[in-house]
Amino acid sequence: MADRRLQVFHTVAKVMSFTKAAETLHMTQPAVTFQVKQLEDFFNTRLFDRTHNKITLTEAGKLVYDYADQILELYEKMNSEVRELTGEVTGTLVIGASTTIAEYMLPSLLGAFKKQYEDVNIRLQVGNTDAIVSMVENNMIDLGLVEAPVQNKNLEVDVCRIDEMQLICPLDHPLAKRERVTVEDFRKFGYISREEGSGSRQVIESYIREQGFSYSDLNVVMELGSPESIKMAVESDVGVAVVSRTTIVKELKLNSFRAIPLDPPILRPFSHVRQKHKFRNRAVGELLEFAINYCRARAQELGFRIPTDEEKKSMSR
Image (cartoon, rainbow, N blue to C red; front, side, top):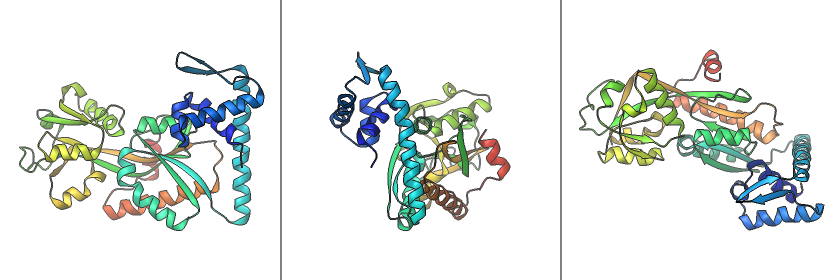
């Protein structure tokens, strides 16, 4: 019901890119350009200056953006409050998740949620932790789920469970019979790393520094962009890797490789992230409550530790 031209313009202005706006809105770039052009024709003025493959808001564009921000939020409030009067939980939710959570936690969570709330449409954005936090900051998604500590104090962060990172290696590797390993132990061997910006890599780099080493001290033989590719490389005896225990449940059952706890252990939070002061429609509230309860139940089922209230506070700082 809200003016589509205004919604599209608002997204473009928020990300300052027609291409990124098209990806966010699941539209083609020509369709996004057409909607913005229609709004410019309506106001009979340019809303963006386009120079050297960059766009900036004109003075008129800044004014329209400020009003669009208020109009779209008021529309969301109106829609939500009317739905609450009728008891409906409907609408579209845009959620973002870092790779590990998107691949290993969300499919079952969202499947269970959709069975209970059939009229809620869900769109998923997948990226590394930095990208998801940035989407929350820029109001591009309703809720983010990430696998590394979040430093932005303006965001509301709720830690739902504590994940453990473990070293994985081939069954016949020299470290395979060890009960625990240190950075000193595994840095001598070929190491397979996640890409820069990954939540997993951030946690591992921080851990290595705490042990008196740096990332450059590792014998990095490969950098890969997903847990699945890393596991396949380890199974192929390319090297060892430190991965989330969440990602290796199936492989451990199949005895595909050995997983060894680190000494000291790497513990990291899996968290829900959202804007503190953004109006939250009923569907977002229902998903958030559902996700928190679901994650807690799954954590207990798989033997993961649920953080205490004090741990939640310390991990959210």
